[in-house]
Image (cartoon, rainbow, N blue to C red):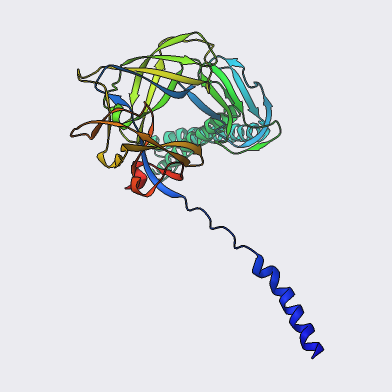
Length: 366
């Protein structure tokens, strides 16, 4: 009996911690939502879009033959002119190939001279009827074969000299060395990037424009560009390329802007802001959103904006709005949202204020 009681006490003691342990909280489900950036339309507007400067020409310079890097003549930041030596491979193997090809050509020339002399001798004998037609034909064939051999070996010599020349890398255009990608004594294959050369011409800035504004941008439009690294100064630019296919997040289109003047202060990679000016259609300024983006409750109408937090995630923010007319493009929002707000256009009924969501673009949601 005592043994049974002891067993019962031990069993209760073992179960007590398990009974008092709370179950782990359920993991929060991160709901995906479709979002688009919203910008005002109707009146004359100015819009700033961020981008980065880049050189008009960015070239990865490489050797056309493989070998061991013997020397590198430049370092990052160096300014070079067209024809400036950049790097050199060990030319020993290619020098030997060129010398061997040169010797083969010399030998072939000697054989060609002998074949020609023999043909002329047999031709004289044939004229005096001291050699047959077959002898003449054989001598002629030997001469032509020797001449052809000379031509073939001369091509090989030319190729060997070109390969020897390819062991020296020079700048194809003027510019600056943006990066050096190899070290001395490193074995490299043909086509491996040795240095990155940024052209010395006018710099460019590439930005992405939302679909609602891309139809108002044209090649040749004048814009204003400013750089954080050059405070208090703006530079004029011109739109040179307007993308016709969307790329990246939230259905945006690439637009390339070229600076109208060359300045050494602007370097590739600098953060830039490009100011676009959009002419209004004469109507009132309003935001146009898909009608499904607007919800309504007892307190009025609202939309959900998303503040991105990184890694494709964001936090929802409920915004009260004043609604205007329903147009063919969507519903007018007269107040309550701001330029650039990321508005939820699908899944509004399934989210709440302050919820963490996964942001998807229009293309991803389709």
